[in-house]
Image (cartoon, rainbow, N blue to C red; front, top):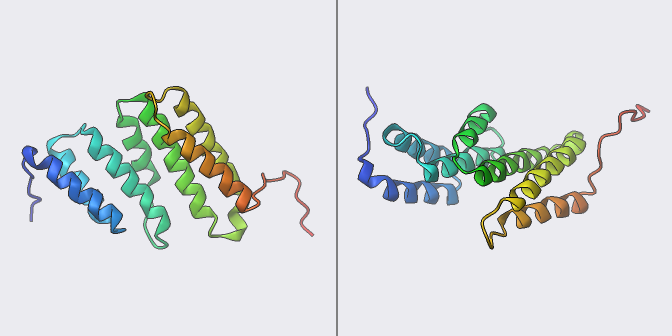
Length: 160
């Protein structure tokens, strides 16, 4: 069997479907749609954003097969430096939030959230006028650190 191609004129409609699948917590279906878009428009920026978000949505699914390399490759394809920086923050933040589910990974979650906050801080400096998204994400990272009482790893933690 061979995959079938979508028509380039249907991209807007199929991306709406991909967004809908993301909102229904079906990232695999959204990813599949984005791959179909890439087959006819490899550099489609809207599809890249949905693809990155759908791939990172999988961090909230317990048994999902995560693909960090695909995420970083997709982020690198974004043409806007702001978007590359911002979505790198999203990737780091979602990875860190997944670590919060395991008590043994709390200090790694702290580090991941701090790395994400640094990306959001950098994104804020180059954000389009009146774009508050990096600020909102930055604040969310800090609030999670406070709420979860996260601390950095200590190099010399006592074993007993």
